[in-house]
Length: 233
Image (cartoon, rainbow, N blue to C red; front, top):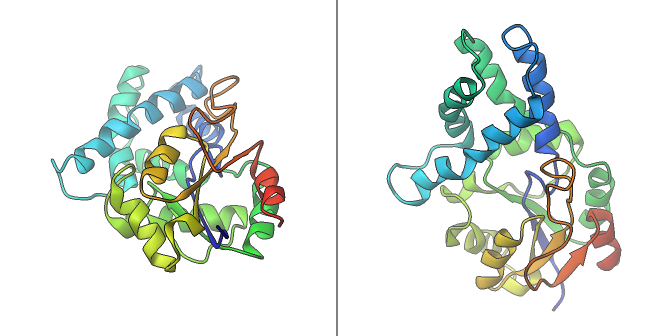
């Protein structure tokens, strides 16, 4: 089936969240924790990502955006590292670290190539402003912003995949979910989307990511440039 649109996981697939959050945590928290293990801090914060989203997915609370969830989980992370006295304005600035992440090196050019033949959109748990900020920072051009802010829920709820297909109006198989996480691709495939796995073996630090898919996928790529090659872009 012809590929007509690609929708992307963003954190880990397009951008290096761990390095960016660690960089900003080290900078902003230096007066309070000069010996902070910033990578461990980023990991601990990310570990609260799914539990916080589950409160929305389960229906316990109405939809709130990822900035809200990150702000709510931050005090526990600070406490875990014994960091006290961080003022509220600095905590808000630390949440903005997730808006200042850098793309993996090959991503901007690969996205440019892919967009020559396909419609592109994020299908991320990040909300619209977060996706816009990351796109502007890294020079990524999208044709729409889909995902949590559009569907008012979090992956792997079906709405995010159904809405990603419906937004562009193509058949599910003509829409490719692109991700570095096999669980995301399993969910997408269950709703008829084609799937592309991007290897990110260092997403969680050295040896801390998926070097290949753990499930059957339509495309398995070394990186986003390799996917562009496979799609003839």
